Amino acid sequence: MPDVQVTSPALTDSPKLERQVSELVANINGEFGSLDFIPANARAEHQTLKKDEFYALLSVADLAVITPLRDGMNTTSMEFVIAQGRTKRSPVVLSEFMGISKHMENALMVNPWNLGDVAAAINQGLVMSEPEKLARHEELHRVRQGERARTPYIPRDVLESRYHAAKKRLFFFDYDGTLAPIVKTPSMAVPTPATLRALEKLAADARNVVYIISGRDGAFLEQHLGHLQNVGFSAEHGGFVRAPGTGNAWTNFTEKLDMSWMGEVEEVFRYYTEGERSGVGQFQCRQCQDLLENNLAHKRPIEVLVGKKNLEVRPIAVNKGEIVKRLLYLNPDAEFVFCAGDDKTDEDMFRALILFGTGSTKATLDAPLSVTLIDAEDAPPVELAIKPDCVFTTAVGQSSKRTLASWHVTTPAEIVEHMLGLVGEPTKRTAPAEEEEKVDSRL
Image (cartoon, rainbow, N blue to C red; front, side):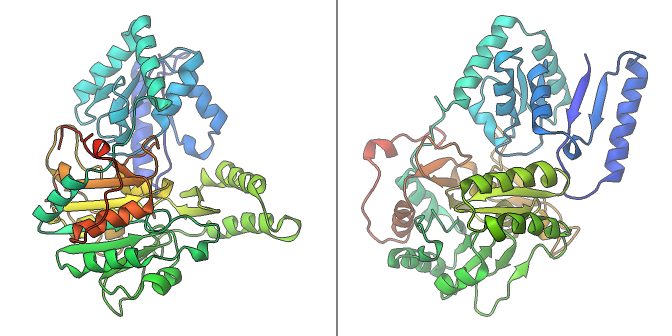
């Protein structure tokens, strides 16, 4: 049975690693292969593989092995479940360190550091009986349809208890859809007096580190929030950061990255926004997105994002999650973390805060790219003081919304209410009491 490994694009060229992989594949094929059988195939597929070819591979596979050492909402496992729906119903081996693993209990879960367990799971998947394959696949398909996974409402009493017990706290807020509601005209999304009051009171406590991590540009953030001297800012989805305090300059995280792709992207954007195509609608936006994803994204270290009323292209190495990692790395003594967001770009923050393996209560953080690029290339790992039950990742939206966050609230106003509650300002309780009582036993 041949093995096909599909790789993801690296942030930088890695000729040494590619050579090592090629040599390993050659050794395997030399020992176990023949003229008409090649057991191992590993190529830089991200440069040439089209989506329909990728899904074709998923549909005919006898087993999927997805075992990153740390990852968040890697959707390949769900794509595999969908692709297998009309073919083999093959099982999937999944790393327990992936954020999605908690929603895919019927996958064969492994610790990727334990090669023996990985090998045993691969064998179990390949010899699995057809009835077991079908039963596991049906359960995984239900999870994909959202029949079981719902995000519980954030327990306010527990949140406040953990907050007051901590000696140092970190707060990470998205802006649009989190601190301010989504509006038709983006320039009208200004913070309410209650929002400003909550941020000011939180930031006034020396034990709190407060950052707004937004897709907005620095000019907008400074115009509406710049007077909050003790609040830090990250603009353009992690591209720029300004530390709390007066007179601090913005740090550009893209300066040391390869940004040569920008000319090509700008040419595509101009094609869809100039002349007859000016004032493009949703259809043209989707055409532009498809062109960028199919003809450019797989050749460059970039990601195409559909945001709130906009289409964006960014370097893979720059995102909100990198900023969260940086701030966590620079504040390893933090004992409480609250992170709130409402859309796809905020999932990068939630992913960065998946710090603990199954059953683990201690976490070590390697120096993120946002530290090695700016501060010290050889920065060492740090031990984190945070405990699993003191990380409150919170999605704004309905409980049925698929997210990596552990908790949810329904509206931006509820985020503000919870923050005002932390600083001792009495507010109404928006969530029904019975919903707040649905707290996991882990707390």
